[in-house]
Length: 296
Ligand SMILES: [Zn+2]
Image 1 (cartoon, rainbow, N blue to C red):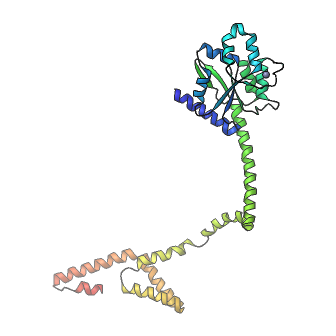
Image 2 (image 1 turned 30 degrees about the vertical axis):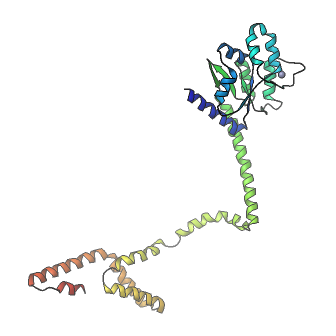
Image 3 (image 1 turned 90 degrees about the horizontal axis):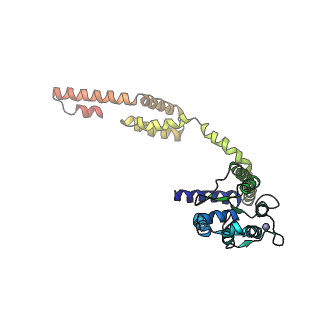
């Protein structure tokens, strides 16, 4: 289970890094509710957080507003105050006049443009704060589930946003690539090829144009010219015909070859049968070299 939990958070972190530009050290804003819950469950926040994030470096921070509010509630949250004071105080802009912790965190994370520009993560047990942050910005949310620190799974709206950004990025990349390609082509004098980029598809169709049967015929020839002297003469004749230009003899030879080619296997077998019959006949009559004569 533990391994699964670490794998899962790694997956989520990778998602936020790839889609939203999150980079370690990840800044995790901790509020009093989270500190209080961890204290109750006897969880050492720094230790467990570091373990949970594994190889990724983290920076646990809080704000002056959170500390001030916890101080005001120190009667019930004294332990949480001690915990929260361990973390460095991040500048939130309310140092002179602290505001409510939730408002401060919301302002810090959402920023002016409501887009979490500084890539904060939020560790809180406050459902109201979680909902309001989730509704307005992309922000990884961490909470304590029992006695285990957990990052919430990116919700559908976050995934959609990631997809939208991904599409935008790919569009930009495509434009950039096209520009680079065109420049490279200009440099290497291949500008015409850019026009001809559409042509290769037509060229692909081209090779189908030449009659494939005309290419196959020469392949059938060697199979037919196996046995007799006439085939050898035919081949030499055809070569001579090619040189001398005697088209009529050429065509005759081709016709002969084709005929043999068509019935090549059958004629072979009948010929062997005839030879075999003759040899048998010769043996029965007492003659020896008849078969050899016939082969020649
Ligand atoms: Zn503040």
